[in-house]
Image 1 (tube, rainbow, N blue to C red):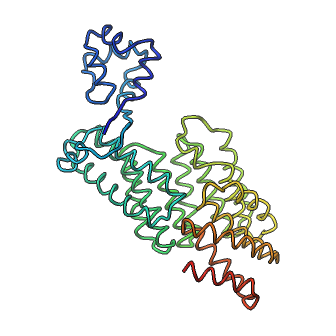
Image 2 (image 1 turned 90 degrees about the vertical axis):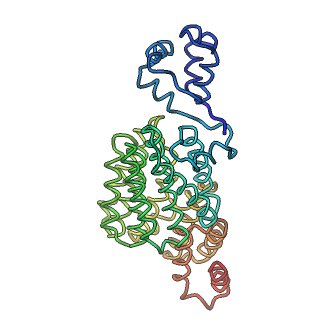
Image 3 (image 1 turned 90 degrees about the horizontal axis):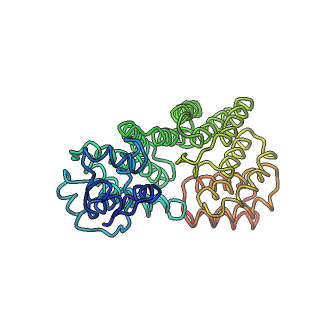
Length: 385
């Protein structure tokens, strides 16, 4: 494994220093600066005030630069093997390696079947927990808590998806673990996201909108000071919970509050990729469908399904809801066409949300089951099973 403190290097260059120049200013060898930047060592305490002045940063900002380790070569190495055999030896380079591996798995979520990711993610999660439980360095342990919070959240998603949203207990166990780990790491963004995932289970799995609304509101409250994106996403699911109970006014109020979060966006919001206009429209369309207003849901879902072409699991959900909106308006030819597109998307990733909506639409088409086009759809649903 090779690693680098990329932000420290950038800060040094921004301050106008070469490695040699900074070493001369500090009275150390150039190789010493090189080892700091390759994350092999850290500056000694007595040097840090002078280093902070040279880089024109505060002591806290310097510590953040030192904590930010990026893996530049993620091939397994003796270092990782040694850490697993001697867990007390784990350092920030090992943590960075684990974080990089988790990032790759997370990026695969929208493109691969959850069952295909579950084994690899479970192995990684187990390694993270094992190293965290045995870490002796407080900073390393806190960094491992951060990775554990993310890996537990992804494990919860994958377990729920793989069970086609039927098993609620295992995913909730992982999400609760993620919340606990995020609190240890003092990471409100991850705590909020894991809490929001718990609300998904309540809303779409347990069919308990009251509990779903409560959890989504908790997620919004935790995120309020750190992430407009997570706040907005949480409020969208507050809206959907209200829609499930037929509360139009409360639903639209939550949608307005969610939409207002777009104006609060800032570049440091790490959750920004989760909260896009497409995601807002997808949930707004779902809300109007739940409120028995398919004519309002249809144009929103039609536009959103096109825009989500690169996110197959989300697109499958949008297409499934669009199919339902068309069926409920009696637009059967269009519904059949969109139903085939829904099944196409589900076949690629077998996402639990899209799969469940495809079968929901199939049930609503039963009254036309003697029609050849409906029989063709039924055959494809049986193939999915």
